[in-house]
Length: 478
Image (tube, rainbow, N blue to C red; front, side, top):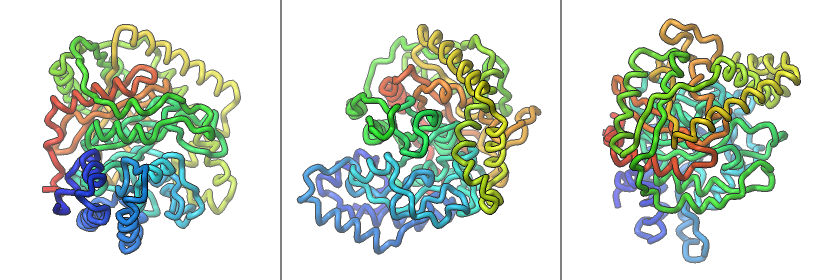
């Protein structure tokens, strides 16, 4: 099989062929390394790429061990490049920070452990913004990751490297993570699928604090929904090191995603009745894409939430600073390291220094009331839909949008306010491709009921069948 045919396979097809020994792990590795050599210099998606001879040797060892390994996982022989926020034993974990540019001390994160256990071969990492802060992938260590469809535009972030590598067939499947849209925004801008799981579905780490650090989560990314579901099955599952992780069996995500969706009810939340500023044309184009839900047999209603959205933002800023500031505080307390922190990181830390215990409590009260409002909506609707961002992909030379439709953005993440709702509620969210603006993709976020990942994946699978977006490949692939 030719290298081009190998990298064009879905992850499910690739796994089947490897397990049938129709293609060797070495052939797969050569195909993907060649694609990386051909395209990565255009977009800077994969970083810390390991030595080619070493990687080919690891692939040959997989081939040699094939008959001796009784429990070969789905990812057996897959070239994988975890997000550079995930710890990887033996490969630098820089977090996009010059402070950690030579960091080889990080142990494997839980998702990386599971990727290795499923048979994957780590070839490097995918690029991120510094500490994952902001939804535009650039840092002082590796530079900027560029959009797979238009290299003058942002790839989004913080999982920007992962989505671009997927879109350009430099990886067969990928992992990402999401705090404030880090799976959803880059998926939208690169025409791939990403899933932010429910709180606790995918145990995200074994750091110094494992109880309050519940707003970010790891999750899968893929070029199609079936592959996405299989990757979730690999990532999900209880781990005793993460006490809030869920005990449900992840085997459900390996089942067929075909379902009858006739009569399912979809709530379109839009811009929250004018609360959120949107770039001109984005809301109209997003609304036009709702016709695909109708083609699936769903009923779509425009719905107003009964909630003070400015209060939700106050909760978000407080809780994000609480979590982020706490993590980064040791770096801030070291003058040499503080001088290497980007302004957005320093801002988060200094916000956290001003917080009182009552601020955290009140923010959690707001968060609780918000979840109750969503529970009210879910009594009528099966899923809720929002745009995945408030702007189309912007210039890669920008740090972040300073204004939208004449409204000044008062923080580095205010332009992504549309993503905070499901994060604060701990709900599963599926990022869906929804169309193109001046040749660059945009998307929607589909919010599911509590712990309703499987139903979301079923709806995403149906969306994939009725939409034409997969046919629109990046120019670099043509």
